[in-house]
Amino acid sequence: MNAPSLFHFTFLLKEISTASWRPWMLRKQQFSLTRLPLFQAAGKKNSSNLLALNEADLKEQFVRGDGPGGQATNKTSNCVVLKHIPTGIVIKCHQTRSVEQNRKIAREILQEKVDLFYKGEDSDVFKEKKAAEKKKQEKKRRARENLERKKHFKEMQESDGK
Amino acid sequence: MRYLTRPLLVRFLGLSSRCVSVGLSQTKTLMLSPKQLSLRQSFSTRAGLVTAVDVVKYWQKVFETNGIPEAQESSEYIVSFVLGAKTLQSLNSKILCAPLTAVQQERIRQLSTKRLQRMPVQYVLGEWDFQDLTLKMRPPVFIPRPETEDLVSLVVEEGSQKCEEKNSGLLYPAAAPHPVILEIGCGSGAIALSLLCKLPQSRVIAVDKEKAAVDLTRENAQRLQLQDRIHILHHDVSSSSAKQLLPWGPVDFIVSNPPYVFYEDMAFLAPEIFRYEDLNALDGGDDGMKVIRTILALAPSLLKDSGSVFLEVDPRHPEMVENWLQTHPNWLLTLCAIHKDFCGKPRFLHIQKQSR
Image (tube, rainbow over all chains, first blue to last red; front, top):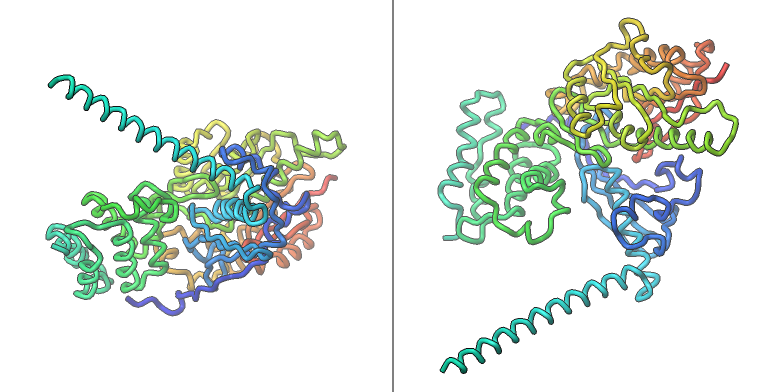
């Protein structure tokens, strides 16, 4: 029960300006999800139609200890909170056990939400959702019709049998 | 009946008697108080049925009561793992509200008991993720830290860039499009195997002075089917000759997350670290530079011209490394960049060997 205070790091939400995220990547161009083949290979909607996210518009937060970090700590909390400053949209991502993967996924989700925000019904995100819903309704309608048909057929059989 | 079935309750109660019989000095911290048992009862809403959410809350309370850090995260990772997922957030609400089987609950109890001994979650689960790879973890082999994921990205960027430069026809004494990378202190193989995945044309020589690390890296390499592109050597770089590190000649990159903790800071390591991890993988000597100096001294004879060394270090090291290199001008090594980690601390050094 004795957690020595020496070992107890206070947790802070560290706000990091995302301009520091992989500065070596910023050398090439503005960060844009469209140029990473990973996301297209994942079978998602064609992300080249989505608005690109500008890293300078993003603010990231991590739950990290106050300590030295690196080897001297072993923290497993790797939830990423990503905010898009112009729209105020916030994404909290804890899909994986890897900080880097969570950061990538957070950006992916945020990109979709920002696209939806600015484009509304013109957004691919909206269109795909609508198409998926329509398909689901169609399936339900067909299933219901099938059930009716079977019921009707059974009633016919019974009346013939009398 | 709104409460836990008797067998399950007895099993949870069994936790305390088992701990007493093991005779640990911390046994008193592992007893379940009546308060904890009533918490248990209040969580189940249907006869004998317990959901994932219930169990997460329960063990979180137990961890908190016993002073286990990251109580919520630990509980969530353990329950998710037993349900076959990585994190709680990745599970859909249907699964989260479905009842857990007795077998699942028992497994969660077994794993949580280990966590109650301050065992790191990564060792409790026997696996952890590094970027998009899932690797086996085993004490006392050093657990990869999240900061190190960015070290890999840095090397990959350098590695692909050199390839592009070569292809665009620029006259650079650049690396071949099949980079050879030497990793010093491979641990579980996280860095080596990530690099192999991200640079499909690369080959890696991975060394570690600990047999357990060499074995674990080999196991992880085989699980990922990368064993053909990696040479794993049991070798202490501070001891004998560097010749055996060059089966493929001079290398394009040397990468390392060497032990870099200052000796005086070793006393402040959390119990998770000093009780379970290999302290040799952390101790960098008085100024944390012991192994860093060894690597830099070896680098000139191992690297091709214009080859690079990438190191993860303590935030106090960049200036110290720069000074150290300046006292050895004959090495022709220059500190060309310092990169920050995702917490904004100076963490990664890029050192380049100048061509003669």
